[in-house]
Length: 146
Image (cartoon, rainbow, N blue to C red):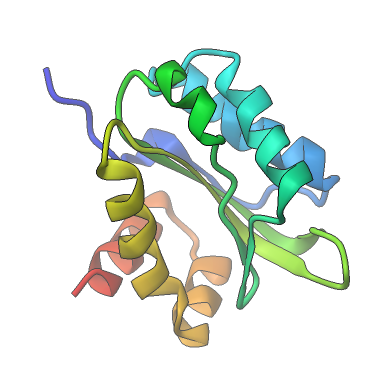
């Protein structure tokens, strides 16, 4: 069975503000729960954040594991946590959408670039931030891929 990269079960809406570390743990645990990665991939996500921020601008952060944690990836997947009040990613960078990703093999960069196409437009991020359903979020991400 081929796993869906982004399904409704991969999205959490209206999450209360929490620390950057808690947000990374949240999306990491969601990747684990949905069978995309092994538990210690979360360590790789935190290590990446220590090395360089995963805040991408426009109110979006994309935590993902460092290369040495790639062997912890079981399947490619995207999970999304929506924070209407935001998460402080440091230096005044507030993320309203935190997207956890895991890419099997070379799919990592492909997934990142598809998301980047969506989040480069502030209006798309605003739509993600204000989406009321998981289906709405999936639709916004899919439309951004064009």
